[in-house]
Structures are given as structure tokens and as C-alpha cells.
Length: 337
Image 1 (cartoon, one colour):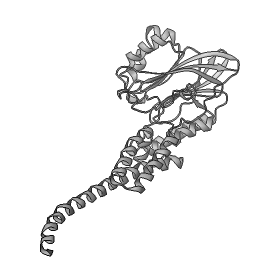
Image 2: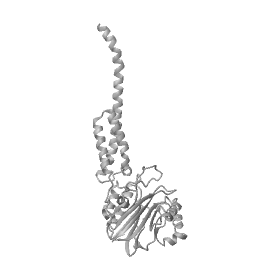
Image 3: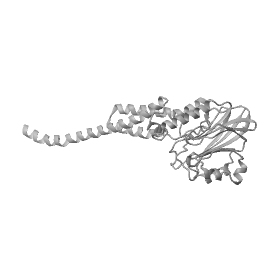
């Protein structure tokens, strides 16, 4: 009887023991994968919570902070499958933190004084001048009062100085350079010279006379936070912060910031000059502007029109232009007394 019991049960032991061990290995692997994903997400969220930008690859990942929900949900599912309770709690906490920081940053209030003048602003990065002709079509269609053009090389600037455009926009300030370094401000309003912001790429400034009211204009195009260039990016955004802090009166600061509201260096520009993002005022924060080839809601908003508290924003749109990887920002503003 004892021998029969041994004979009957031995095959079961051989059959089920490996299966249980294999399941444990799968659970262990799932827990490790979940832990690695959550550690990466937590590092980025921690830097955001500390009001810093960190070092590579954190600044690059901060630009896409809302999309960190994807690896976080994947990690949470892995933790559930692995029955890893710590990972489950960690995943829920990470999702909560991401939801908190996805809330758009900055004030939504617009100026409420007596209207002085409507000002339609267009800001466009034409990617080494490739999108120049598409920009001309957009200018013709939407008739902006002030146009900020980044990566406008020699050919781009010469094209925008021809024929009807020269007549429509008789006032301009430019940094003439090739490739990504050239930049241009076009205006229907008279312009006075203002200091350019020092940077690797051109960032001209001007003071516009908007029906008797001085408005400081600043084109923005700092270096992107590429690996090895994060320090340059931070320095150039810091110089723009200095311009915002020193403003005296109305200001429009527009262009390709190469930064989002999740970058501390960008938030400091807003806070230093009491500036507001026109997209935030109009309720379209986080509308992607780059890369324009990304489908649907994918991408990130690095192109902005920032305004001082003398402006309200009635309509902000992000326009697709051919031959450039940025969407243009078109903002209808009202200068108020």
C-alpha cells in the first residue's frame, strides 16, 4: 500500500513542481520589468516635483511627461500579473503624480481693461527655410499683424522681403544668418530697435508702436536640450528669463522655446515676467506643436506665444505647414488699457 502511494504520487510531483517554478520565474521577471519602468518614471516625476530639469535623459523625457502614462500603466499591469503588491501601490502613486502635473501651468486670466487694439500674432519655425512658401500662404490666408519666424535663412529672408510682403510688412528686425541661426520679425506696426538676446541661434528683439502703445517684442529660439547641450539650453532660456524680468510695459515673447510647461527653465520665464501662455488663456494648453508629423494628439508643445498682463487672448490655433516639422502658432490677442 505504501509502495502504491509512492508510485501514484511521484509522477504528480514531477509534473507540478516545474510548472510552479516556471510561474514564479515569470512573476519575478514581471516584477523586475515593472520596477525598472516605475523607477524611470519616478525619476522624471521626482525632478519635476523638485522644480528642476535634471540631466540627460530627464530634460528630454520631461518634454513628453503626459505620455509617461503609457509605461506607468504597463508597469502597473505587470505588477498586477506578478501579484507584486508594492509595485501595484507604486504604480497607482506614479499615475496620481502624473495626473497632478498634467494640469496646465500658469494663469488663465486675461486682461479685462478697455480694448486698445487687436493684434494677431503668428510664430513659425520654418526648419532651415524649407517651410518658407507654406508660411507665405499662411500669412496670406490669415493676415497676421506680427510674424515671428525662426530658422529663416538667407533665402527665406530674401523671399519674405519681396513684392507684396514687403509692402504689407514694411517693418522688420532680423538676425541674418544661414541654416537654423537666421530669424526674422515682420510687423505692420512701426518698430524700434531693441537688444537681441545672445544665443547660438538668432533671437532679435524690437519695440512695436501699437497705435501709440509700446509693446516689447522678443523672438525666441534657444538651443534644444540635446544630450551634451542641456547646459547651453538652460543658459539661453535663463537669458530670456532676464528679458522677461526686466520688462517695463506690454510684452509679446514668441517662437520656438524648445521647452514645455514641464521644464522648470520655461516656468521661470513665465514667473519672472508675470507672463502667460496665450494657449493657456484660451484653454488649448498641451496642444502639440512638434513634431508636426506625429499623428493625432502625439507630440509636445514647444512653440508658444507668451503675453504680459495687458493682453487677453481670444483664439489660439496650431496650424500645419508643409515642409517643416513645427506647427505654427496663430494667436488673436487684444491689447487693453
